[in-house]
Amino acid sequence: MVHASEEKIHTMSNVVKLALIYYSSTGTGTEIATTMADAAEAAGAQVRIRKVAELAPQAAIEANPVWAAHHAATADVPAPTPDDLVWADAVIFGSPTRFGNIAAQLKQFFDTLSAVWQAGALADKVYSGFTSTATRHGGHESTLLAMYNSIHHFGGIIVPPGYTDAVKFVDGNPYGTSHHATGPDFSAIGDDTRNAARHQAERVVRIARALKSGNAA
Image 1 (cartoon, rainbow, N blue to C red):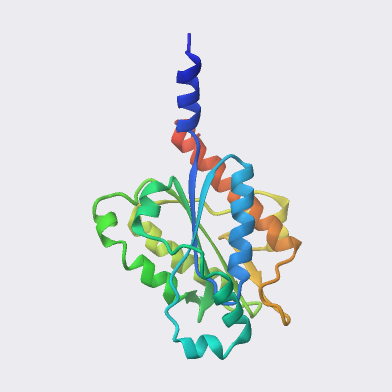
Image 2: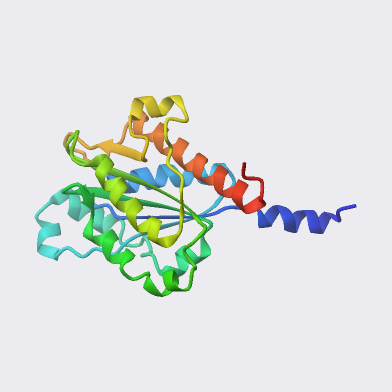
């Protein structure tokens, strides 16, 4: 017979710890990350949201009112540390597209991970990613593939959304949630992106939970 306290400990041991680590200049990534965090928490995960440190000069930020406003509004969001990845069972990275690649801010964070990588502390975790850009074919897929290059080096388990739900045939990107940011308010995301983000977060949590509990197929 399983004692109630033992059952509680077993249940808690299967709670997925998810780190959402992203960069966003004008707010689109923040909206996607928040949507994913809400979906993951609703699926029973513990979530940490971390926005990587800004590297751009203040003059560049202030030259774009939307960027400046978002920079100020997210000033209290903690920056990630390597310990956030060590803590996590699953990690979702997010970055806008920069010439078909990830933003320098996220890449700089990756470059701080050598010690935990060498210790093997990044391996055997679930990873996934999302992106956004202001042009329709401006590097959505190549940005996610570039992001996943690092995860191969981590020894991580990449869990893309694929076409595993009808919402992905609307979003159209099997590599991860991607958003075409248009209009005067670049931070606004519609239902198509929100649905894709929720599905991706739920899938990451579900597969991480299965791996953690030893029930993966």
